[in-house]
Amino acid sequence: MRILITGGAGFLGSHLSDRFLGEGHEVIVLDNLITGSLDNIQHHFGNPLFQFIKHDVTNYIHVPGPLDAILHFASPASPKDFHTIPIQILKVNSLGTHNALGLAMTKGARFLLASTSEVYGDPLVHPQPESYWGNVNPIGVRGVYDEAKRFAEALTMAYHRIHGLDTRIVRIFNTYGPRMRLDDGRVIPNYVNQALHGQPLTVYGEGSQTRSFCYVEDEVEGFYRLLFSSENEPVNIGNTDETTMLELAEVVNRLTGNQAGIIFKPLPEDDPKVRKPDITRARTLLGWEAKVNLEQGLQRTIDWFRRNVAALG
Image (tube, rainbow, N blue to C red; front, side, top):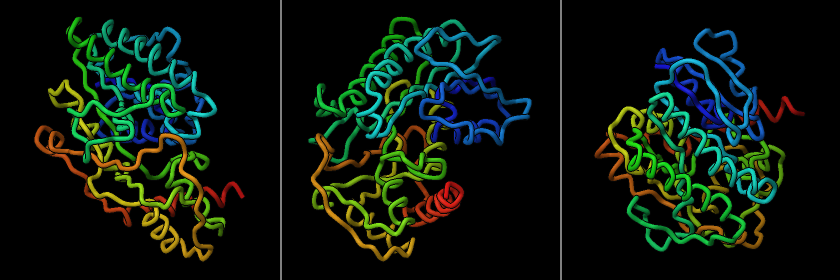
């Protein structure tokens, strides 16, 4: 297959490139590098099956030749980005999604949208099934991402219903692993960075809020299976093991040998109190569930961060 990955120089997009190239597919990566990095894909340069195009998908997309699938992963996704580049987030998930869907129509390509568990907001239903409509503050700081992804889902389903486009929607729960931005602002990079610098880990609130962390290798396997399924409705892909932020901090300190301990700060605005996927549909439709446990995944992530933090000095 000949596959286009928007945002393919980012954390998830670059791992997707690895997977598809490893399966013998041709991969074209489209990225404006606003949060992505060429470091994530440079190991593919020189591969005749790989091509990189620097482009902003909020502008018209032209890709010569046929395409069999488009995976739309272009979007900043860090809470830090919600404060610094909110308009770009809104544009890439609206204009960018529209342009990517239009390209899929032109090429007759299958389309996979990278959505997010953030569409559930601060959920009142736990765990979260795909049938839950969410609890989102549309004008809050996080709303620029939450509502942008909700719009992208609505637009994708409209193209499926009205134009008959073959679409997929994956709702991604918290994912971690090598190639996360060192200054990402999400909890695992924050904790690991602080621990490797011998600093106390910053826990917000009492640390009782939960997340369910999925190692990137497992997450990409879910994406791959979804693309090659026949399912058009949204599917949750995430780990069902729920961890409090305080527990996570304690594990990171133990794995890194950090003796600096933990400090507590007030909760950020609209920070979800719980987050855990109901993956009944992923299990039933895709035969998928996460396999890498948190300590295994964290150790691999810490090892990668340690090498890269050392490289940066």
